[in-house]
Image: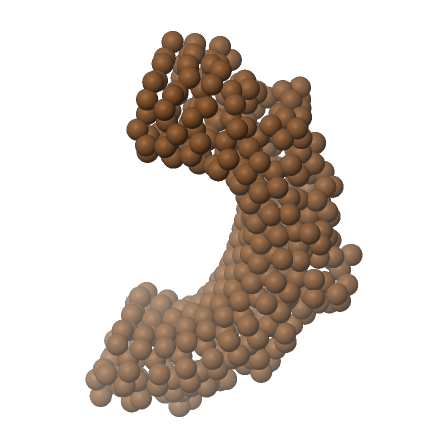
Length: 434
């Protein structure tokens, strides 16, 4: 038996790999404000004596990790706590009967009413969980991970105060509930989905009305964010709060948004990387005057950007790289508001030089690479001029480049010059560097 009569204010309790442990009541610890951890390796022989947590009035975080009998801990009086954060992680050994008993306790409000964060790991039977979570009216964050047997989540509305959901390594999940997307009482602002290999789409018709950040990574069977067959022109209005959209390593993704609709008007940050089958981003950029950062990297089938990119008056940073099918500057050119422009491993160089980089009058940093046929830069034969506002210039992978020309002619603000993989470079400008 382990008896702990008194604890310091900021201590952390950790119990690790104990086969038979009885923790008796801890007294005089009302100032305890740190964490209590029950770590993996604890067998069902362990139990917590009555009154173990009677004094934990200021405990903020509780971790139950791979503990075979978490219900015995609930009997110890944890529900009497008022202010704290709880993380509950359940092992793969948990069966339907045990998980059902936890759900029943949730429904009977035997967890602290002010619980704000809940983590479920290795769960196999969350059939009633969404309804049970309604009792946690202060819940702000929900994480579900390593639950490889879950195929769907129930059609039930989320707690009204829930701000973020993080779903990771739920391999069998194919779609998310419509109730999550269509509820008018949701406060959901962030949704992150990672390593969900069976997921085919995120939503039908619309995303949650208050959603500000959507991140999808490593979902190998994802075809589209919004189901093309269900999408209508009204979908854009319903997602007007979305500010940040990140898509990474989704090799089956063919269309980011509906080809018949525009991206959300509130969008400020858009990043698409390693989507090898992507052919379309959206119908156009005409409504995205708030977009500030745009990154398109390693999308080998993407031939063009949405129309209206020249109207992105707030766009400051633009990266286009490893997009070999993109051969020409978009109609209307690039927005003159750019301060950072990185472009490489495309076939757009000739078109870009003909369009004229000098148009980017606010540009401060230019990174350009993969221009295979260029012999001089800036190109002497075309009278090419770089923006005089440049403070940084990077030239990478110009295998035939022999000469830097006219660098000092108008680049009076240039402070940094970076050269790499230019194996044939022989001459710097006759009139020197700035």
